[in-house]
Structures are given as structure tokens and as C-alpha cells.
Amino acid sequence: MFGVSRRRLNVWLVNLALVVICIFALIPVVTTVVISFKGERDIIRKPPNFLPCDTPTSAFDPTACRWSVEGYQRVLSPKPSEGGLLPFALTGNIVRVYIPNSFLYATSTALIVVFLAGMSGYAFSRYRFRGRSLLLFAILAITGVPLLTNLLALYQMGVVIRKAQVPFYDDRLFLVAVYTGFFLPLSVWIAKGFFDAIPRELEEAAVIDGCSPFSALLRISMPLALPGLMAVFLLTFVNVWNEFIAGYLLIAKNEFKPAMFGLYEFLGQNIINLQVVAAACILIALPIVVLFIFARRSFFAAMVEGAIKG
Amino acid sequence: MQQTQTRKKRRGPFHTMLPFWLILPTVLVLLAIQVYPAFYTIWLSFHERQPQGWEYVGLNNFVRLLGMGVFSESVGHTIVFLVGYTSLTLVLGFIIALLLNRKLKLSGLYVTLLFIPWIIADIIVGIVFRLLVVPDYGLLSGILQNPAIFPPNGISVLTATRPPSWFGGFPFPPALAMIYLIMASAWRALPFITLLLLAAMQTVSTEVIESSRIDGANGWQVVRRIMIPLMLPTLVVALFSLTLGGMNGVGMVFSLTGGGPGSATEVLSYLLYVLGWSQLNFGRAAALAMLIAVVNWILILSTLRVTRVEERTH
Image 1: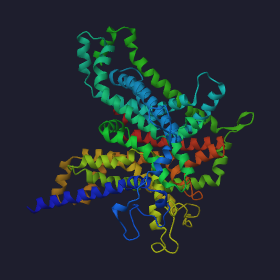
Image 2 (image 1 turned 135 degrees about the horizontal axis):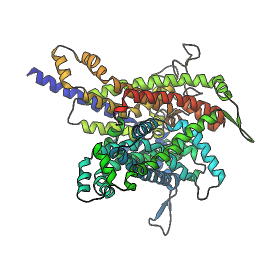
Image 3 (image 1 turned 60 degrees about the horizontal axis):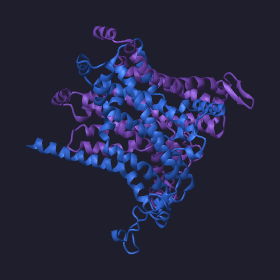
Image 4 (image 1 turned 90 degrees about the horizontal axis):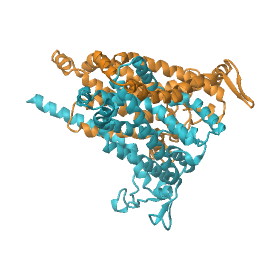
């Protein structure tokens, strides 16, 4: 009897501790959201106040909150426009230039990575050939190599290619290639793990029933591996979206730089206007956080496959 | 094995070569983007950029780099950062994993909420933490800069300089900004480490723990004598991956402190950027990149050793 109630008390305490930890983990996020909805008057107050809800007579009055979307307005800077789909156009550099750039890099890199990792992951999972172990080991080792130390050489390669005036060459192609090379090794391992989990007997049965091995790959394995490839896509998309230093250094023209650079530039321009910086952060991070919450199973599955690599 | 051999024979030449064609593109991309630049960096570290081209200078870049005051200072900052970052993250991650290991009804919700920091870009995390301590206007600054709480004038995280060092040139005790940088970095790394440790914790058999409980071991003894020894490989992997990430991560320094105040948070990864792109000193930057890469490779190969990866490549 005593044991049961003590156990229940323990569960209560553990829950309480976890709730406190969750609150601590989310405080920085919540404050940023609150800051992004403050007006300039409340931003430059001394001493600062958590919620802009105080009045001269009371410390907290929920009816008197001075919420404002000024920060978002200044990031988006909507201007009335004619002839478009919407009656206004968003003219802020972050939404007009940097976010579309990031979207382009993240989508194209993720598509290429899924394609390449799907092919090689399948081969590593299904075939035994000479040099396979060595190659897998090399790919695993490269997975750990951070971008930073290769950045000088990549930058110099970019300079050389630009000078050589290769037709159709563009910094953007180079950046996507760099991201692909950088996020591919982990993805190969994740894809291999997913293919390993699909029973080989299914393909063999299809082959016995008269299916060619290649169409068995297309018709049996690929559909079954789709959740895994989706996980690779999402993980790569998020990784590219969040990457800063390569996008900042490897692209020469500002109009081709990604969202993280836009944010960094913005930070320098708005030293006092914290609400503008906070709004920009929210606008750039929100799509990723929403994506994560809805597709968290995919992310965790990819991480379990990838995390064992250490 | 035997079966695959006979199957291969029945297929045409395209099919025997199929794995080769499937893997070739991946190998080519990795050669171009990972292997070639690594060797190119080695080449760069022995050369100096001159107006007429690259000139071979032997070990000069390394000698000059090691002679720079900022270099030894940065090494100190990096050591302080890494020790603080890895120990804080591992200890907190272990505690949170212990709590999550109780298999509560709400575990899924906790994991999702706790994982949000991991999905946020390092540059944004830096900005988010910076907003809290912007002098005068940040929410934490309201407390820290209040002379009634921290006399005489209150303290500001982003501008307080480093206190006088206890051990000659070694930057300890660190500046407040460094402690804050460690906290922000740990905040972002915690989810991943927690999940890694939780996964390892779940493989520790409950029977062993139950029986030691019956033998009279208390909670701390179970953790100390059973869980930690059994989880040691994972703990080492976590330590190495934190060190690797901490030594090469640069985004948070960019957006949180910019290396300041003064050079109090200038770690080696940030110094690489400063040398290469602010001072346009490519040779010395390449020498630094080489040194960092050597440490990286030691960490990577030890990780692979610990996880006994050979078993998994078969």
C-alpha cells in the first residue's frame, strides 16, 4: 500500500521535473515570440518588461496589452500593388529575396540527396561486392567531417571556377553541390538502414514471379522505402535551411544569399529594434518548427538510423 | 552469399554492374566536394597568396600562426568552451534521459517539446539568446544590470570583460559572454544528446537494475555502478560528437557575441573565419584549418573505434 502511493508520488515528481525542464527549454522561444509582438515604445523601456501589459495603475492588466505587429510589418514591408494575385506585395528583402533563395537551395539539395542516397543506399544494402566494407567505412568517416575545415578550399575552388567563366555556371549551382556533398554521407547511411529493414524476400518473390530485378527495385522496394526517403528529404531540407557559414561565404552576390545570411545582415541593421529582429527570426524558423512538429516521426526515424553512427 | 553469386550470373552485364552504377554518382560527388578540398587545404597551407600567384612557403604559415598571440588565446578560449559545453550538456542530458526513461504517459509530448531547440538554426539560437541580454533592453539585462541585485553597477553579459586570469595567460575564469555562449550552445545540443543517452539507457536491462535494487543498492549507486559503466561507449560517443560539433560550430559565435567583448569568445573556428575572410590571410587560415582537421580526424576515428563500426559495415 505504502509502496504504491510512494510510486505514484515518484511519478508525480518526475512529471513535475519534466514540465519544469520543458518550460526552461522553451523560455527563449516564448520570449522571442513575445518580443516580436511588442511595439517600439515597449522595446526601449528601462527596465524591460516581459509582457507589454502594465498600466500606470496596475502591474498586469490583460485588457491593456499593447500588442503590435510593427516588427512583422517592417520585415515584410507590404506595399500596395496592382495586378498581382494579392492587393499588396511583400517588399522586404528577407521575404522577397532571402527566403525564396533558401527554399530553392534546400529543395534542390534535398531532391538530389534523396536520389543519390536512395540509389547508393539500395546498392549497399542489397549487393555484396569487392570494396563494399571499405567504401561504407569511408562514407561513415566522411559523415563526421565538418564543413568548416574544407571551407577555405571550397571558397578557392569557387573563385577559380568563376574566373574560368564556365558557361551557365552560377554560384548557386556550386552551393547546391557543396551542400549535396556535405549532407550526402549521412543520408546514404540512413537510406541503407531503411533498405536493410525491408525484407529481401519480397523482391526475390517478385523476381521469381517474372519481374526483372530493376523493376522489382522500382515497384517493390521503392514504395516500401518511401517513408525512409521522405525522412532523408526532410532532414536534408532542414539542414540546408539552417546552414549559415557556407551560404554566407561561398556566394558572392547578396541577391543569391540564403535566409540565414539575411538574418545576420538584419541583426547588424537593427541594433535597437529588437522586435524587428525577433519577427524575422520567427518568420524564418516557423516553417521548420511546424514541419518538425507534423513530421516528427520521420525526423526521429532518420535520427535513429543516423544517430547510431555517433 | 552463394545464392547472390548464382543470381548475379543469370543477369545480364548491366545487372552485374548495377551496384557500381548506383554508387558511382555518390562517390564522384564525395570525391569532388569532400576529398579534393581536403587535399587542396593541405596544399593551401604550404602556400601564400601573392599578387602574381601562389608561392610555396614551406612550413612558414604554421610557424607564423603558432607565433600569433591570438592563436594561443583562441586555443585557451576553445578549451574553456569545450570543457564547459561538453560537461554541461552531458550532465543535463543524462539527468533528463533518466527522467524520460520512466516511460510516462506524456513522454512523447515531452520529447517533442524538448526537441524544438534542436530544429532551430544555430544562428537563430544565437540571436534569440542575444535578445535576452542586449544591454539595457534585454529581459535578463533588466535583472543583471540592476544595481540593487548586482552592485555596484550591475553586470552586462555582452560587454563585461574577462576577469583577471588565475593561471597566467589561460583565459580562466572566463568572461560572462563565454559562460552565456556555453549555455546557449548546450541548450541547442541537449535534445540530441538526451535522445542518444536515452536510447542507450533503454538497452540497460531492467532485470540487472531490479536485482541490484533487491540487493539494497540505492538510486545513485545504480546510476554510478551499473548504468554509467554499461553506457560508457555511448557516453564516449556523445562526448566526441559534442567536441567535434563544438569545435567546428561557428554560427552561434557569429550571431551571439561576434567574438567579443574584445576577443573573449573568439574560439578557433571563429578565428579561422577572421584570418581567412576578414584579414584575407589565406595561408595562415589554411594552416589553422589543417590543425583543426587533424583534431577532427582523431575524434572521428576514435568514435568509429568505440562504436566498433566494422561489425555494421558487413
